[in-house]
Length: 152
Length: 468
Image (cartoon, rainbow over all chains, first blue to last red; front, side, top):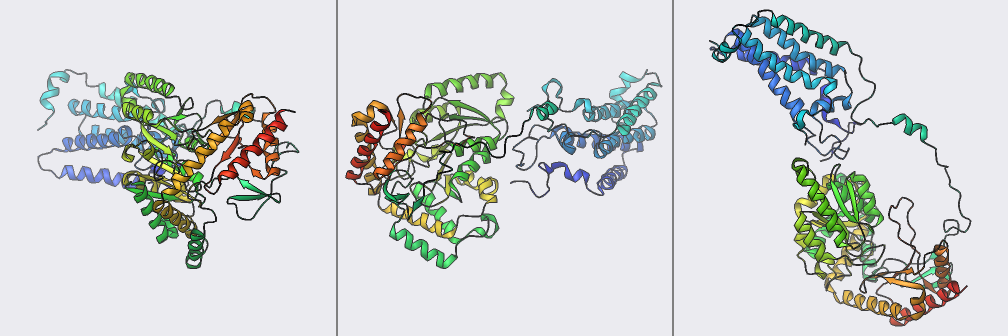
């Protein structure tokens, strides 16, 4: 199916610019956290770490692993080898959407550190995951495939 | 309490307690850097290298290029009446060996009557694309009949022959894909290639050996990068009978290569549909190859069927993809119902009377013999083309600067003698210009005497122009 009607040759990431997206995103994260908190065997630090890990895992898959678009774009496949993150705003860097999506995991990480009382096991696990989702978001890593991972 | 505790207890128990402060400050600095950077002005994905140089180097073309005062555009031949067996050019009634009407269905009374009845019923236009109120029962009927005639699962009808071919190719071939094609392919296919943005690899005209070399080269590259090869589709696009040369394609050899290298095969049968094979079913019938082995057959309906538009046939899966992805199908008004009815009627006649194809074959072979036997033409021309092909090209033996002018002089002398021929022009964007030629286009209405007359007119004209 051809995408159309947006005046944009690749409308795949248009939803990220839509009104209320930041609020929806934050509510989603909060809901996830509340659900985890309400599970009896999980302590508060564990619930925070799991929120952080789940959030980072999902955004890593959606933004940095999945490539291309779910329909036949009118650009004849220009975006077929770009990740979702790279398609945002046609590759423009430092846009509002990008700043929001970069800030989210970092702020979540700070909160997690605080609520896990800087306990080193939690800290190491959360730090590794936040680095994994932050590095590919930096402009220096735009269209870079380290060691050819996820290239085609 | 902690699930991860036992794993990390051994590794990190003696860490300095301040390490997390350093790491957090570092991360905080990354966050500040990201937040306070100004947004880029331009996207990086569609960025063109040396953009400024390209803009500076650009020199606008004149709106109107200087025109040769003798150009055809300034002195267009004026035709009158319907163009059938005869064509009236500048008030001279000529035998028509210029237009594509192989089976002589133009002026056919039955077809005309049905088309007129369709105008009374449906009106002139269809007033919308197929997906948007433009589908009328006659379109579905034509698609059904075409699929049944070609013995495929499904067919799709476009409203213009050129856009059929130029839309069907980019519906499948995309950026990064590779298309192998004969260098003599016609202009609509080239436009389809441009729209597909694929890599195009041309092999020399009808040179299977060259194609095999290109494929072997490609398969070596593929073996070096298997992941990339798995994501690259490979196509082979050929014509049944080549519009620019009249040659038939070496189909069995091409099929072998298609199977060996797993290519997707598209055939343009604009000329071979209705003229090749026992019953006019085209190149697959002629070579007795099962039509299921070909991925898609495209054809214009402006040749044998003497209507307007085009069609593609193949499996249901292949055809239905075009309903949403063929640009010419989605975004053009559908074929006017009366032209659809004309095509359906012509197809029915072709289906019921395969003798027409047989007769056309005899005519084409007769003309081939006449042209080959003529010693005068043999002195100046080389006849290109398969004997059964309704399109024949006479290529001059010696190519000089003024060859085109001379050929046009021959054609206009023939016009005065009452024989209409053409020097096929090439579009300026056509990337594969062949040498200039005189094209002889056959149709079923021409009698043996007409053929003799045409050849003698051509001989006289050639003598008077080349002997000058």
